[in-house]
Length: 320
Image (cartoon, rainbow, N blue to C red):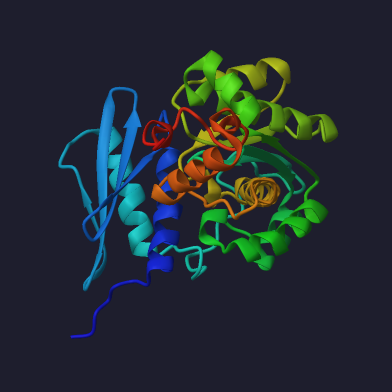
């Protein structure tokens, strides 16, 4: 019987995509550990903790979840097995394209809506990037025809090609990078990632709304149950209705924002790699830890915060 084991590069790409998906359910970065014949991902949301182990053996990609019950574990299970069923890999670029919008309130011809998303949340090295986009139905259809969808299902090369077209077609767009040095300072004050994410999602959406004030709807990919983003935006912009949705990238505006956020993240990672003198890896696994150790050897430990999000578990695992 022919082995279904995935090539190592493809397996790691899928792990990284799954890790980014699981980060939307977590209150802190998803920790990655190597185990025999696979990788373990630890998803923590407050007091809840789920362990996902992905094996890559002769039967191919095989996920195993900690046997617990409850809404949080159901959401983790849906993400893991939803991805497995769709075979959603960055290299394969498979999967069904998104709907135009998840917002039932957007009904009238020419109606506008905004969407926001982030990139870099689950990466030990590099910035946190947040983007927002405003679309109408015509623009959404154009982007759909171009192949725009959740950036986690697209290769980095495709994302680089699509980003300029998103900027050209969107009614308004904005993307910002919170570089590691500033990220660490702000995380130190908040001691939690969600307030930081909320602040930058609000900032991105406010930026595009100022450009197109006739937009009255906004959708944020749900990463917290807190109503803070909704309350702050609706207080700041009278007449605005804000919604959040798990798997929000199924909406074209959020999918477009995910592409802009990822594109900016890739650009900033290239810049940091040039500074470091070697290519910095994505994700939060052993490769990222080894890269951090190399940075310390070359530049000293005091420079690590220029490249890395220091609250990740990787920092505790550093040698030397």
